[in-house]
Length: 437
Image 1: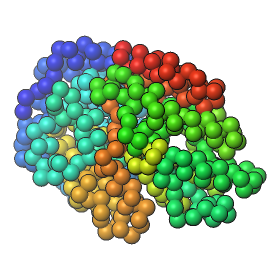
Image 2: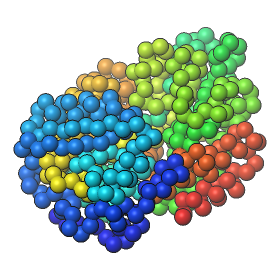
Image 3: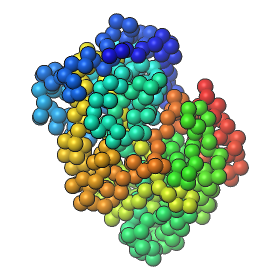
Image 4: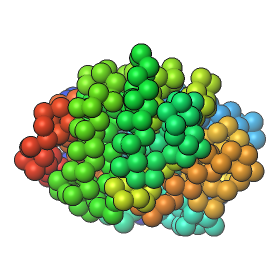
């Protein structure tokens, strides 16, 4: 297999996290004598299962699914995977340091929004030829594949999907005179439902909640409202923000109306994401965008309804988040590492491990399975992952533009909701400036 490792990628390498820049990693590790990307092709489509010990890194939010997958693989294969879980806030810096010293594990997962930066930086091995041999290659979530594609080469497969949907509290809906079995189908209905719950006047109960100081929370939950409306949030290259369009302004305006009406819980204003879902889980929020992966947890305390995120005039969408996974540039066991990746995409892993434990599958042909059919909410979550207006936004400077605490995106939505919303056009241009750097 041809190694696609260019001098440009060795020089442009830059991995960022929370304002910390880890640069020049490839200059410290890797190099032209590194193993061939994606392995030698030994073992064909299944790779090698010969008792190799493989190392795999992932971040703490995916610990549950990662343990399920690794345990199932180890029980059925000669290869054995040693899993390392790293706290979320430490993960990027750990990967950056290991990349710089040529000590990345055989396999490692990455938040899908960082994948374009890391693939361009050359941290993953090229698996293009391997992926093309899979019978179900066309059924793998396209958003994650696109995020892991650089210069027409593929480097990443989906590890765990995390989707954004609308959760509502059926008990509060019934008290407010709403149909407890019918969630909002437009942004306007979302507002009406939140206002209806707020009108109950129950102490400590609010119509809705959002991460008012959390960039990642609101790309995850507000971008789908724009996509479902038929508009985009960035250009195709991820270098220009399209956040001042009609649909985007309608979304900001809706949240501003809810805030001014007192229907947004006060804690939202300073919410950094640390306690973003706590009030809903305690039964104090009527309706809000929510991570689908937390359905089982929310179900423990609230009778939860689930619908896809709607647009201004209908439609449905989700942010296809979660983590991608690839073989590292430093792996000397790439053929065995591929054996894990091809198994990860199998029906055995997707249905009997992930779906059986209420996690979203990464193959569209497996969305309707014996486990999702037991709960229409899970089936709805699986199906929206492949909806035409669902997206995984791709931008090399995504972290700086959107997720960082001081990002221009945070400035935009805080001005739009809390400061009257008169600077959206100017603030969107500031996002473009960062995306284009």
